[in-house]
Image (cartoon, rainbow, N blue to C red):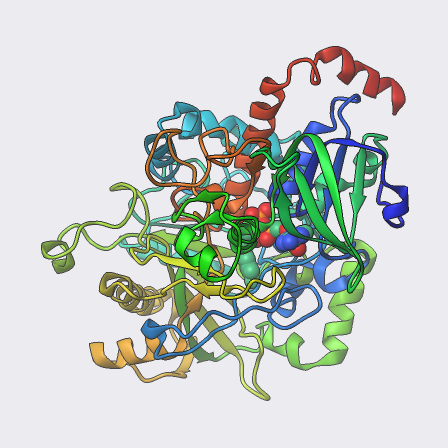
Length: 582
Ligand SMILES: Cc1cc2nc3c(=O)[nH]c(=O)nc-3n(C[C@H](O)[C@H](O)[C@H](O)COP(=O)(O)OP(=O)(O)OC[C@H]3O[C@@H](n4cnc5c(N)ncnc54)[C@H](O)[C@@H]3O)c2cc1C
């Protein structure tokens, strides 16, 4: 249940999980499948119930930055972005960042996930090991407009009985035909039926798969749906912000958490019988670990934090996608701009959504995306190694948007964000205060490697080739930016590029005896006991994909790893008892 307040806490819990995003909510759900395992989930934010902007997929663009559902961080000045400090949104509340994200469901390629196995020495983290968990988490559902989807996804690579809703677009958009016609017209941009099969073509464009269940956003809250919250062994305490994990009995068994009970409330300590599982996301994990004494000894000592484990890898290796969009004024009124600036129209589509869960509000910002590579004979390969995980993994991504948000007072627009999805740049998250609640320093070092800028430039140029197809004839009035020379492109990119908000690897998994990394392949924090991390921070290499699918896959597998470690707690008899209770 969701507890009213901390007075309702049980006397003890086997596992205490911190953070209700894809990592934490998934793990809390799976561990409480066994009735005699008591789990407490602590979440810094609130329930996020009944928030229209969260539930309506198309309103995802309004959820960040600088809202009540966002931690409202920015990066430190980014040299690659001319010293700018763009927002770095992270969701707060049930659902975590999956409640505020843009819902695109992509797993990355086989080579991306196989790299995890290579890096950790654990075959189970490879594509073949993780695919069953992608499927286990997924509840593929047919789009709400009932159209024929036989050419829009491959059923054999999807799960239909899982928890997280995934669907293809449920409402047509005016540019759909032009996008698909371009894939037929231009050899450079072939159609891909399903981007989640692990087998990207070298380049491909296809229908977006998004985290939507019958027209409504499907966040990790689906793992905390009422039927799961009814379990007597699952308690959720909201507005409980964890400051540190603490050793129990003075040893290196870090199975106690210190948290603030309500905003401005008292600090309290709870001890888990078995483990504390941190699922606070790639930004907060290093912060909690460092304030608990796990991190670079020099830094911790300078902040008067007692060092428990000297591990300079904590917070390092932050990898993130980067990109920006180009916008064109178009010769059509059938774009979302009309809805964004006309309250009456907006009310009408929202009413349709509220009544029937149909219409333009049921989808995310784009009905098509593309994953593409630089050419094999691109001159950059003479001087730079390929930053992608393999020859069939994309370098960049297209998102085809029929309208721009926020829009302008007049005019209709086509927007084409492009992202570098195989970046070479690496950054970090760190702290500069002994106050556990001081804002972290987030430095993704976006565009710090010159090949990353090059890839974004080539992506924008490829985007311009895409829309130069006959399929778009007489559609465009003018570009809003005037880009011709490489210098103009690069200046534009540095002025406008932002994170695509997919940070991973700040507590990366590595082989148990590796000199780098923060957790071992079973996700236990190195150098201590009783402490595990299950979220985006353990992902050792960023897939060429939006990241929540990866986190659901990681958390599903992590849950089985945990169950296997405690056979006496997770025996099938206890699952049977739960069935009887429900
Ligand atoms: C604007 C935006 C758009 C995105 N678009 C997409 C997309 O289209 N598709 C996609 O797949 N991914 C997208 N992502 C990324 C995706 O949402 C994340 O990769 C994913 O949510 C990470 O899951 P997580 O469990 O690691 O962390 P999170 O989802 O961030 O969850 C962490 C949770 O821990 C809580 N927490 C943090 N610190 C504490 C503490 N000290 N005490 C208690 N609780 C704490 C937080 O409040 C939060 O609820 C997007 C992200 C953003 C910001």
